[in-house]
Image (cartoon, one colour):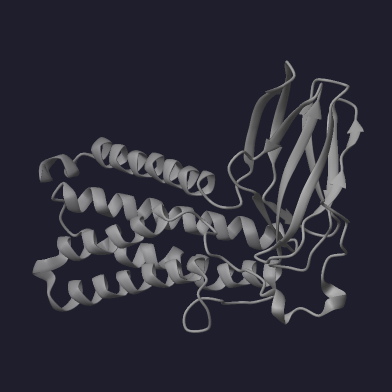
Length: 286
């Protein structure tokens, strides 16, 4: 197998596969995360209901929730409360906007969450969305593109390098330790410079992971860095374990990416919020 790595086309093939694997990993992480919208494709009284229930809102203004509702006789409301609390439920009537029913969830301070469901009625029938549990939406401030885009690029390239290193280690490539500085060169700026800036713009805090908090996103990034530093030390002082060290660091980082993005992320503690900053109550649900 080592002879194959002497061929340029094979190295390009392995690199291409690493990029493809990174794309699929990034897509998986995004779609399984708690901020990915809940897809809606239902029927009510013989008419179609489609769209998505948003679970994140950035910037100023209320969170606009819309669903495409085929029937013009259907009515709807959003039932909501602060999350996680035992507040009484409140409701907001949905208004017709062309072929859609829409309502606005009240704007919240960064990291605040609301849980909500949509209740639709038509022809004496009722549909509650989502079916089994409420949708939870988290509010944040806007993150400038000049911070967010480089952060995403650096983290993606770092992941692609990890896949490339892992493929090389599994297939018996020599000198796989050369990928360590490349991985750190993208992981450190992406996760520990641009990442905290994204966090600061979005939630007004640079770092909420260990030792200051339990944010899984920050802690995952820290775990990946520790794994690669350990791999670097092993390769430097015990070079015969080079491939094992690279596989160890790669497995840790890939495990980190298998955890959905933003799960157990920044979340407002409502007990610390002044009454004036809490959402105004809508009409209580009977």
